[in-house]
Length: 142
Length: 212
Image 1: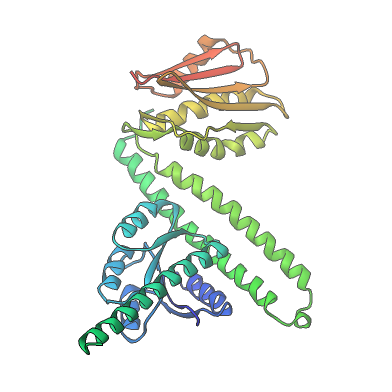
Image 2: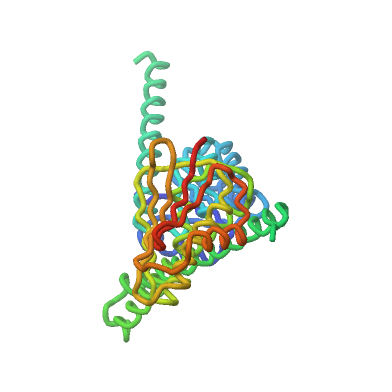
């Protein structure tokens, strides 16, 4: 099953080329160039991992992270940062982001982190499925 | 000449912002070049003429991105030290930044700058910009006088509770200590009483950073 991924960054060329590269590797990728559009896309799609730039005009990375966490999706968030904004990424991790990556990205490192995040999301989904089954069985007295 | 604190912070803030933007440019170039690499790799072998030349040009683009990225990283760290307030300075980082930024001045004269860094993080409370100026001024003294193929070594050591930065040249200069100190005091306004500078044996500057 392919990883469902959302890339949110205002750098259009960067987002489009990264999206294409990850699609070539069988990731199912959607893109957004600002926080508002990302939230709209999230209303209609479920994601496993979200790549989020910490510094964007309008809704910044931390605000976008908060709003993403409010959507009840299980997706893990990877924050993208420059040398000057590592502290913001650390703040983001304190608020629930899974990890961060420095720009320019090393492809191998990105894919490793995406797969790590994906397997954690899958484990969590499995635990939820198991809990739901246990709950149904309990309610039916089985 | 002293620069107004607010102006210094203003320049630092703008410089940091510009270097952040440049980093975004490099990130985009790197992804576009990565995409070209992928398209070649994932394509039918016969569909590309000049495939090797394209791959080789792409590798060169990547190398330049890496180079540019290192320069911007140092420049960004440098911009964040644009204040003359006392702060807890990571001495390893400070030396790394100032030595890397100064390499161009040295390489123009075919002089090698070598920083012998330590794995341990040494921190000292001082004005980062002033300390950078002292290190630069000391390196520059040697850079200006040395002949090609000479070497300047920069070391950082912990001596009991204090630290010592040593700038050591492979060539003996003819300046006296009085000349060096007078020149330093004329160029840099060292207000931190915990910093003392010595010029020894006409080939070594020791900057002592005393905690008390």
